[in-house]
Length: 122
Image 1 (cartoon, rainbow, N blue to C red):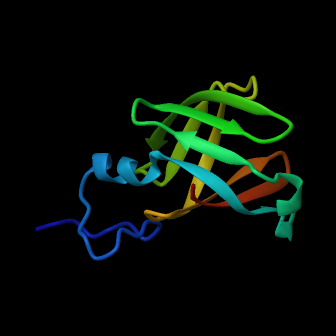
Image 2 (tube, rainbow, N blue to C red; image 1 turned 60 degrees about the horizontal axis):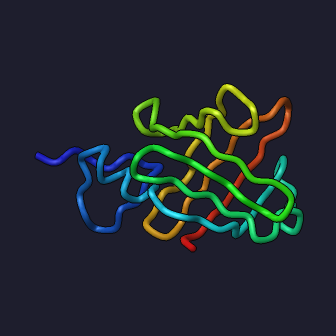
Image 3 (cartoon, rainbow, N blue to C red; image 1 turned 120 degrees about the vertical axis):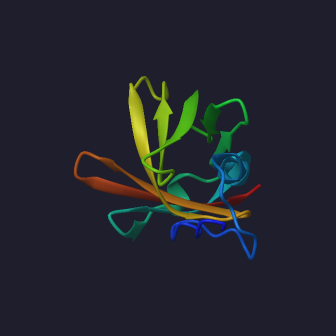
């Protein structure tokens, strides 16, 4: 029997039962579609922003003002992605809201602020 798909991920009509296949959805270069801080739209502040997750666990982001790189891995039953080594921080925790073949939505908390990213496949 194939396990049920977790509610945060959508994989079409295909059953998904392995971390490898979930990673296949994340491994990509993504571009910004929407960026919100505490529910308010700030997308215009980060035009041309991209993030890249590679098969070998590397992560990078780039936009007109800044860029950085580090590593990534799934944690907490694959509901979160831990980024390490980016922005001179030890780590950042991304809480996945939606992961589809062509879209990735997540948020992270920075102090009292909730930063929410809606990314689409580049």
